[in-house]
Image (tube, rainbow, N blue to C red; front, top):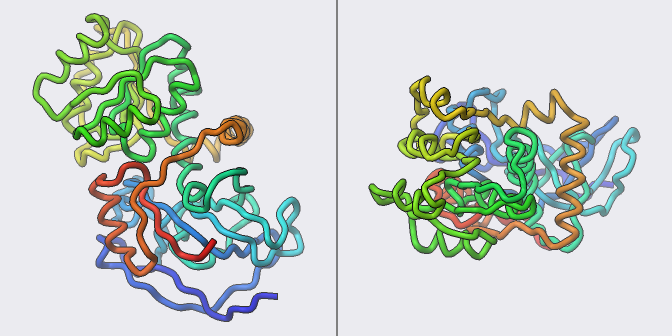
Length: 332
């Protein structure tokens, strides 16, 4: 039985900046078939979430749109076709929008058991970032033990995941970030060395860190003005992973650079990976779950109340948070 009759969502009829979005009430849905109704405790926002909400993402969502692609909470009710999840279970929801709400009606394939030992805030912010980082580093770059990995935007949500998983895969990790606080944060997540790329000669510093050799893999969720210098910093046979464009501009690369370095520019799209290669994606998720049980937890960034959702969206768009921005919606 579902005691509440109304639910709240953050919604807009047109895509745009945070001030386009308002909190609205709507009737509480009843799950049917393979649907699950989840009472949300926490939801998280990264740069990609705000880009999607603003209409700048490669794929445009249907309208009206509710932002947020990850949340954690408790199962309130489940449809008759649901197996493996029961009322009262703590779960994580991952879907293409719809998570900034106090209740979510999700499909069975969008709901996953919450890892043991995590808070709701941690659980709301780990899945997409860790899935992206593992897919990028293992499947797309074939990062090997002993190789050197440069992570750009290393203090953000997906950057932090790349630092942590890079270490789990046996790499030497150099964490790039624009402030002393962010670099200290990245080192606390396991980075072997840190790099200040806010200065003009940062490539010289990177050369010094690698003995002039360069790095084997660049994990790049930033793009913008860092993109080409980072690619030029690859060692022979290096791989530059294109994760996103938090730096704003989508950069271009002279085609002779991959030729001269025997290097590869490799795209990473975690959403399509889950659709087109579900078995591999499931195996990665199971590996992440094992690591989480072994103590791999995402650091929680800035925490906002549900009513302050616009401030949370703004913080996520600016990359100001250490880790992913979290919105606390319900109570533990």
